Length: 357
Image (tube, rainbow, N blue to C red; front, side, top):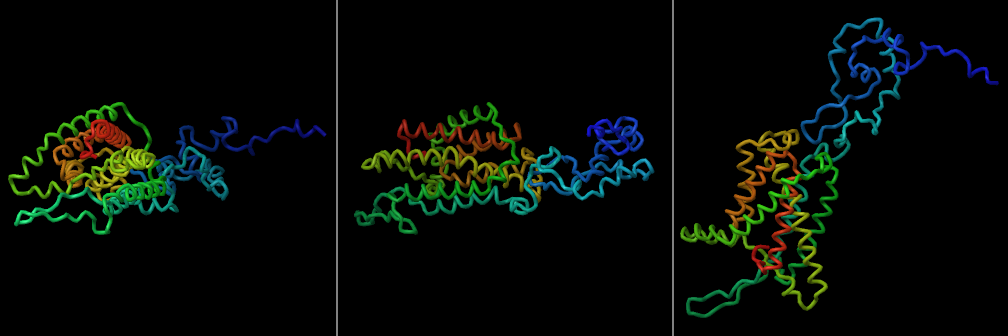
């Protein structure tokens, strides 16, 4: 019953990767590249990715072996490709790409990751009511109460609810596009943390100088400063009747400004705008490639988003653009943004500088 255990093995029927050297050399050239094995087995070879949404199909195969004239020594190896099972790539194989597959919505719509959360955040932000306005002075010396509700009839007391809904829906959008974040390796350098610390010092200092007001008021452009007014909502004062809700909203405010905003703003500004300025197929542009036009947009666009803090926005976003070109890592830009916003929040709460928040 054990006679089959000692039967001599026919080496000519062994797979090529376990056959002895004499057998392998008879069927393949001695210096055959690895891609020759991969092509025969129907497996893709690893390809360098310049973008972040290259699918795993259509692999790049070394053509040096395919251009050689066929010979009798390669016939047994070429026959291996006729096996349909060998042509199916293994998802666990290190040769397969980690980028979204063509069946993923992010493969055909790469803009979803970079635009959807940010645009949703901006649209929902238009519902936020502003701080109360002072009464209007009339020509006869009297006053008229200002209209303190926005276009949607929301008043300042509704701000916590509107902001909470905005952050919740934005986080939902971020979770939806989460597969689009994965192609960017998550690593954070100490340089990013240092840039965030230096950035918050510069931001606070430049905001207190109010250089924008000194430059625009003499030109009659002081109305532009009103476009960038912060909500300046102090939950510890406005919601002092409900302390639990006041501190809960304060936590939500920190989550929005120190976690949500850095991700969606940096992916929109540096992941989309600055790379679109380099080439139309921006998803193929390596992150960190900065041209003069991209650097200009990387500073000008956020300045338009912060009209009341033009000088501070110019200095801070230029600093982060330098960080982007230095480390070529989008998560370093996110980390610097998060550190600045978090430290700014601590400064606002401890020194009651709510006009900066």
